Image 1 (cartoon, rainbow, N blue to C red):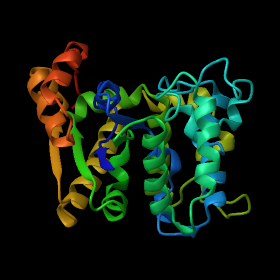
Image 2: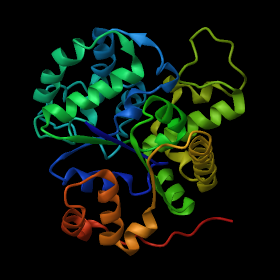
Image 3: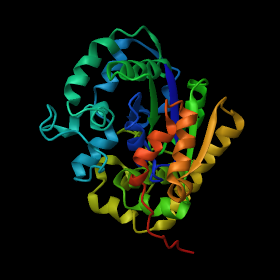
Length: 313
């Protein structure tokens, strides 16, 4: 099984890239999987197959909050006719985007995965993740998987440690354009809030316990106190998201320097826009596509030149 991981800050053309990779017939383009199963500080924990499936089939707290606020990210693809459509607060995390991006019948794929995953041996969470993606590629009839999660740059160290043989694609984009896009996106507004809380108070509001003695000012960051207006207001200050880009990029660059992967392909979104056929052909060759030039030629017209972005001083 060929394996590859796209690392990026998010909001840098990564969703488009995953959608284009989905058009390659031998490749399972697994979107938003690794970040859906965070936190990554548990990647070395050893758990059973049934315990692992319980995580995959359960809701992701951050996504449930965005559903509660009426601000689900536009990347959600779960169908309105789906089994969980009437209870989105409890939508299984792998159904929200990962499975729904692969098939129009994501509930059936979910059901097919259940017995396979529950039969996994007792192993580390990181090993479970790889086994899950291997099975996902198998069930969708593919020979390789390429995983891409927006914001994965912040967990680069864990990705490199858990998957030393995987091909690594590092996708970057100008921080000004990335920050502007992040500021308008509910998931990244939430990410920025959590990073800011950690910086100001040393506490992640999503892991604080009800009985904790919290610092003054911390309560406004707690999930149960969040409102849609409060989250949207964060997007009014672009500098917050420039700082988030700097933080996430530094995490990725340091990890790549400290633990250089055996196979690394760096690619900038601006270069894809300037020469889509050429840069996508290079990417397809790195990923091992059977005919990278033909794939690139068939999808290149979906790459659009973005509007210029004014960045605050």
